Length: 207
Image 1 (cartoon, rainbow, N blue to C red):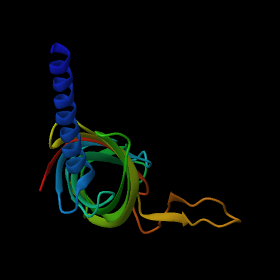
Image 2: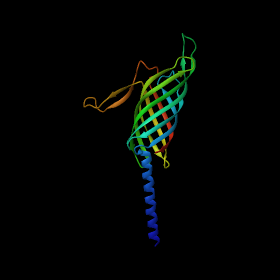
Image 3: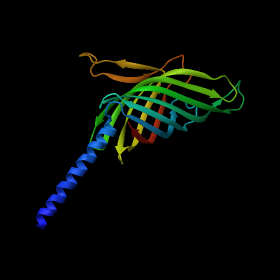
């Protein structure tokens, strides 16, 4: 009798955790029409050492189109500074505010019931607002990826890395050139060329 009760308990627990895992997959891997909101904190790393690396704050909003594809918007803010020199004068430093905003296409790849990786590609703008000089906004492409780890029914942790560039070198697959790849290129129109963004955040998902 005890063995039967034990087996029944094990079966009930198995069903419970199976249903719970399915709910996580539905929320995290995204059934069509579900949403995710994610406050983030991270850092901007500039290729141009004239600009100081700095922390950034932002928010990402995502809508799941299918279980594998999604669209994501992002807005962010970073207070930094840059160095400049005029006609041999001593090196000066000026505060600079950076605002970034973009729309991205997301491809999701499940690694387990509660962990999945994703790749992202998008386009948007980066506005540079110095303390005294005129502000300017440039168009930037971005690409990268990350990982999301569920820790609740509708919550997850995210780790993300993105490369921002004003233009891209995109090569498709061909027998001569080999596998396709995307890499940042340079643009004479943009003041700042390459920006690397690291971020972490908490995801809140809902229907």
